[in-house]
Image 1 (tube, rainbow, N blue to C red):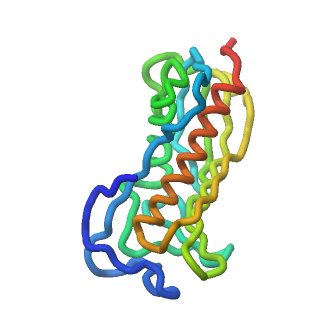
Image 2: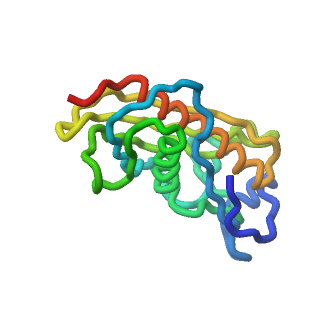
Length: 203
């Protein structure tokens, strides 16, 4: 987790007040970390991977940090933002996670460079803090629906959901973002491991 712009922080959740962004000082900007923890001896694939930018369900595409107090309502924390659109941030972190794991011969987010053997397509279906009971700190919920396809024919290898829930320690901005960092890290590590474990050399 990285805080890119240090500015005075504001109380986040006092009932519904503090949820919605409004006027006032510029927001604090946050980014998250790539996955770094992988099993020892994890196999390394010899093929080339392209990671497309995830699509995102409504309300999760912006750079605002989403919070839900009910299943049917999406609001946003005041005073904090992601450094870029959530889907673009996740794409970059997935690329870096594969690089950190040294999991494939090459990985990129664009269709330039080496021949692409596999393409990772995904949809960001959950990327929010949840306050359904409205008591205590929120729980961060991250879920990516991922489809791995092979080669130019775009044959589907597998389609899976990867999900994690991590409770924040408090309602402070730093702790909420830290919970996002942990949850996304768990999801990305599982994606890396599944990708190199459940594929075969391209034909």
